[in-house]
Figure 1 (cartoon, one colour):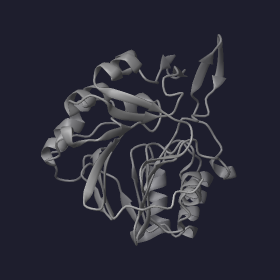
Figure 2 (cartoon, rainbow, N blue to C red):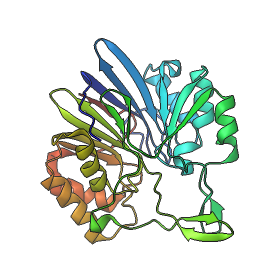
Figure 3 (cartoon, rainbow, N blue to C red):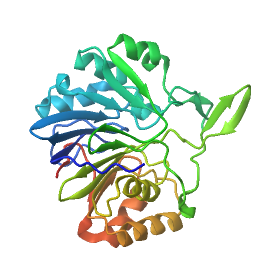
Figure 4 (cartoon, one colour):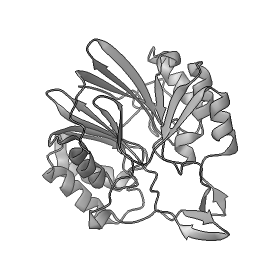
Amino acid sequence: MVFREAVDSARIVTVLDDYAGYETSFLAQHGIAMLIEACSNGACKRILMDTGQSALPILHNMKLMDIDPSSIDAVVISHCHCDHTEGLVDTLKAIGRKNVPVIAHTSIFRPNYVFKPFIRNIGVMKENGREAIEDAGGLLVLVDEPFEIMPGVIATGVVPRKRDFEKQGIGTWNLDDGKFTPDEILDDLSLAVKVKGKGLAIISGCSHAGIVNIIDWSKELTAESRVDVVIGGFHLIESSAERIEKTAQALKSLDVGRVITGHCTGLAALSEFSRALGGRFEQLHVGKTVQL
């Protein structure tokens, strides 16, 4: 399956991140939300990827950026974790329409547990569950496979995990038939936006599939070798120095134009990316905008 169409232009706006940026009035929160505006033939669509732990900072930041929530055409949820999903229903209420597509993996509503410092579910909570989403105007689109949200904007579906150094979980567990099983976070999906004359923009939530695996898969899905920008969280905050170094070297060898990351990436990885990638690395923050 190869998606060959491309959009004429795209803009990516960071409306939520762990870091609010220097000298701003934006609000930060552990979480992420990215607004993607994709335009073709004079028509533009807006897609919100992830909704943080609360809609409050997202809506506050959108107001400062003069972004009307009602202009959002669809919402994509990268995976089940609460720092990406808890703002969903209140964001849908702010959008204020019926049948707003909410795109996610089929396992998005599974309970997902951690045991440190004490047992708790970090998956989708009841107040953002299936019924609440539909009551707030969401139209659930639950898909495992890659597909086009619009020509040139691809949801990756389940990402094949081929890079050996990226094969690791993060210590979360699923509860199936009375047994806890290690969670592979197979619901982790990203967006690949193919832009005419530019190549790919790849937007991730936490990159639990591995950011290099995500890049490899996005290139394969689109038959596009150029990667102009990769932006989002890379979840390297608890990773070994070896994995961080291998990730940085892979990003360098893949000749990614810009690497913009924050959220769950961690200081050690940010420092290594700065050292290895130089001017191609930028720290993610609220308000960070990429125009393609």
